[in-house]
Length: 177
Image (cartoon, rainbow, N blue to C red; front, side):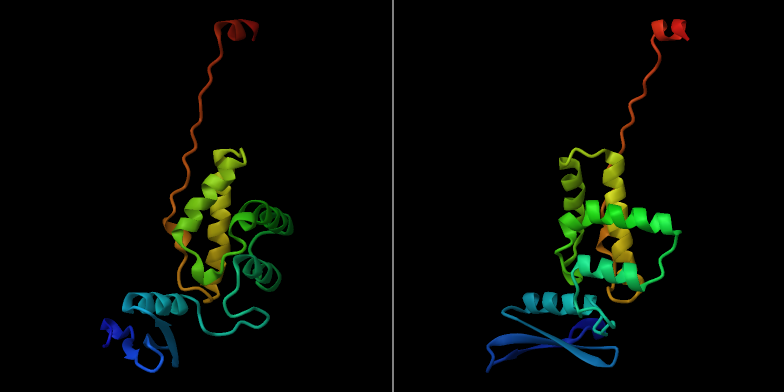
């Protein structure tokens, strides 16, 4: 059975007793297997999400932590040295403890939605929660820019709202001024 818009085809392999989906991506055939057709399509979509080309010095489907170390050392990042140092410290402090063990192909918007409460649970401010999500987006955007990943799943995650309480001076404080 062919999928629409050139998205591949699927068939049941009787000897292997599983479904096999095949797609031609960039001149190479990519295949995936599964027990059901939907499971097989999901596996194929996941494989197509991560670019099949090998990046020198990087495993084929790296974890987020491995990707960040590679990007930090091998890609020229914008900003001066101090900015890069602060960015790295914050990525290590806020993003990697929660998401560092997740493979790039497995990243989903739910990981971003889980990151914010995890940072909040540590008692950090909404501003820091926003910073953690921005950094996670930044790290994954680097993978998208380098064509290692097809899209950034964190772009759909909503930023936590920052509620600022306004404080006015009391009559006594005004009198003292």
